[in-house]
Amino acid sequence: MKISRALISVSDKSGIAEFARALEKQGVDIISTGGTAELLRKEGVPVREISSFTGFPEVLEGRVKTLHPRVHGGLLYQRGNPSHEAEARECGFEPIDLVVVNLYPFEETIAKPNVTLAQAIENIDIGGPSMIRSAAKNYESVTVVIDPADYDLVLQTMRDKEGETTLKLRERLAIKAFIKTSDYDRAIGTFLNQEQATDASFSLTMPLVVRLRYGENPHQTAALYGDFDNYFEKLHGKDLSFNNILDISAATNLIADFSAATVAILKHTNPCGVGSDPDLRKAWEKAFATDKQAPFGGIIVCNREIDEALAKAISEIFSEVIIAPEFSVEARAILQKKKNLRLIRLLVDPAAVRSANDVRSVVGGLLVQDPDIADKARERIVSKRHPTKKELGAMRFAWRVVKHVKSNAIVYAAPDRTLGIGAGQMSRVDASLIAVWKAQEAGLSLKGSAIASDAFLPFPDGLIAAADAGIRHFRH
Image 1 (spheres, rainbow, N blue to C red):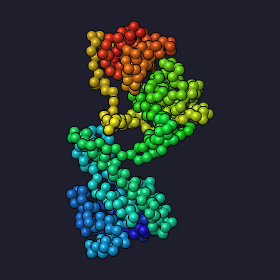
Image 2 (image 1 turned 90 degrees about the vertical axis):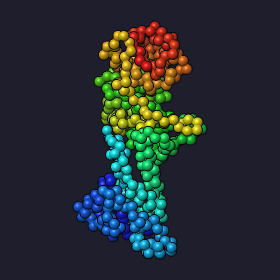
Image 3 (image 1 turned 135 degrees about the vertical axis):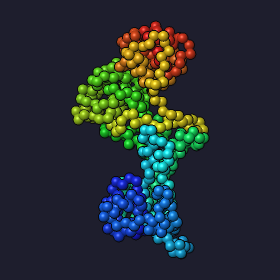
Image 4 (image 1 turned 180 degrees about the vertical axis):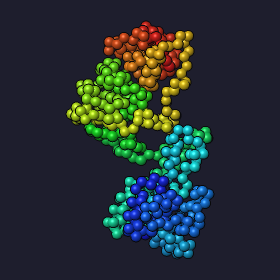
């Protein structure tokens, strides 16, 4: 299928002038719209306005420009089908062999603070998805490109095939296009469902990232979907396992709740210890002191660049994964000596890892809820004596950690460190007793510390156990 005519209409204009210029040099007739056409003319690329192609002006402030039979007829008629060919000639449909379209930035728009419903709606693309779907449906004859990353591949194929693209390439690009329009519509539906509070279905479509060797257990198959690679980069070590990925997600969500320099250690998604200090070596010592046994084979996460001093300290124990926004040259040299250790670079601000929805599978469906984000505005002090600044700091530290501990959960803490953690018990008093025992095993005093529970204590026994251990402040 030799490409003789292309329709280009893009929101993301990166690389489009160079791509269009290369198409024009191969003799491709270029049709374009609005701002894209203006840019191409400025860059010296010959271009026809869409209105001259359709014989109809752009109307309604540009809302209607490509929604026209000459556009969709030129995309959809089946080449080689005698009746389609005859009807296309009768209707004056000129074939469009290549569509280059990316959509209004709806998701970027709704991610902005204080975006209004009207602004969001104005950034819902109509003509773009329509052209993409028409071109993708007819991929046997039409090439559809939605991603600037594919420009070079299309051009190289055309050079190699004397202006044609291969069926295999067109098919792959069509699948990518349908996935994109599906994701785009889902984002719109999810946003409107939240804004308008209507009853609606919940849909989720994600591209395959990688098929994993096995799942939680060796007899289970597993795969990772989504855009995980946009958040994390593996710098060293073996491929990530199903359980590694679960732990990385849990560790990153935990560290997202801390703005001060902090180190956290986790095992099977549960925090073993968390410490904060401008000196990362001291932050590590505070975290590790909480429990020196459980971290073996665990996950370490830090929200600052890991330097040589911290690398030397954490290299003394065996860890599965270490996560940080960066590693110094000296730190990498130390840590990469361990071939079984995975080093993971966090590519975004930890606060950006929070998903719009917390989704969990249940028998027959999914549970969906808003993410659990701590809000100081919702804090209520109900005791007669108000806590001091230091006491309030300890309670907040404990609260930030306890939300990441499996229920029933209890955390004892000082303003800058955990002192005892009890996780996953059927009885909350057992969680409290375990946290006390772990602190005693570590030689840490709980006198004057704060305690946080992930829910209210139905009986006084949990508080009595905490009071006996020396706590003075409680938050749930």
